[in-house]
Length: 240
Length: 232
Image (cartoon, rainbow over all chains, first blue to last red; front, side, top):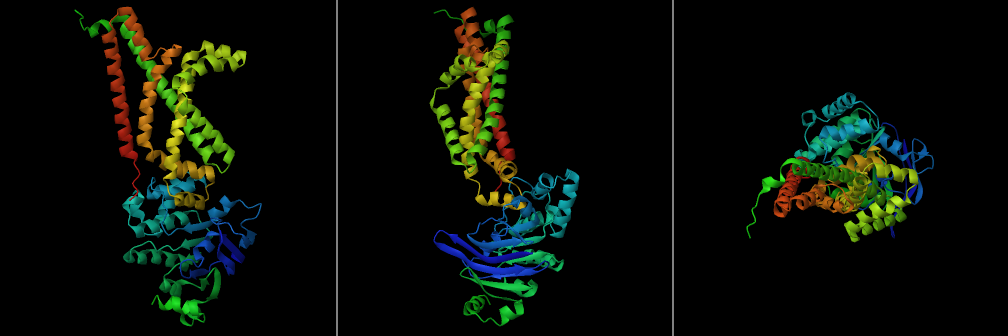
């Protein structure tokens, strides 16, 4: 579904992605591990062209996302993106955040958009917060609302950029539970995270990035329990 | 001395009518110029944030002209200058339809737009870039992201300076008397010259200006309370 082919990305003189090649298959949950600065967030941001790349290709359903004929706005509707800092729209209620795309892009009538939004809110356990402003929610609730917002657009794949890194420890669980149930329902997911437990339990494949390259990849049991790469060993030992 | 302060003398018969017409014209001019200024201010803001440098320079030039040339001069240019550039048919039409009101509205509205776009730009700058990214990630194009996500927030942030701009606009409508718009100041001068009750006439005008100003401030404060962004 998503293919990275020798992807290179530079920020000025600094190379963040140094030839990343890998594939995310439909229905697969891929977890990206790596220390900060390893390029994992940048990598998933290239899928929807939040970051442009300088070398290689990112293919979505076999089509180069930077290709000439690609309507990036249409592509983004098919790819849900969840940010570390939630990025809910503070001037809209939780419901308003979710219905905005449905009404304006999907041209759904108000009632249908509302019903759709409530389904998603129910799924993330926030139906009772529909009319609250984001400022009235806890961090965990905000992130679940952000996930509902992305899900409402009915994406083919969900990208998560450190979805629990900005949360207080006691709120991490509720967000991970939502993500886990998504995975169990067959959603294709790419998750940048520091939650080794989540990777072990939910992921089909783990990619370990170091200095802008995937240095190790495979099923979590293999990669996490029997790491061959020294960097991964030290990364894991710091997080036990 | 022997001056008797007698406000009732200017609030009777045709003088009262003049005041009422004056107030109505002042309010109409304020509202019309405000709407024009807001609309154009928003458009200019969208244009100047487009990733195309020359447009930014055009807007910057627009802003500097309107900020640095006296408003009265701008009004006079619009009234005495611009119509001459128009095709005859349009000129005739405008002249037959209260051209002084129309052109004062245009002059005031265009000048206001320059200030509003400056306020809006600083409002937009204070919104985190991640909001724009989130909007684009849902699938909105640039214009949609601006109109549904960024501008609604920026407008809320700049309500206090916008109240200030509205007050200035309201008071500046009095400059339109220079081209014969029958607004409150013009009518007050008229009452004054008919009655020689200078203090009474201007006392009435002052009280009217003050009341409307206070009403604008109260309305603005209400809007600010209701719409203020809760960020934390």
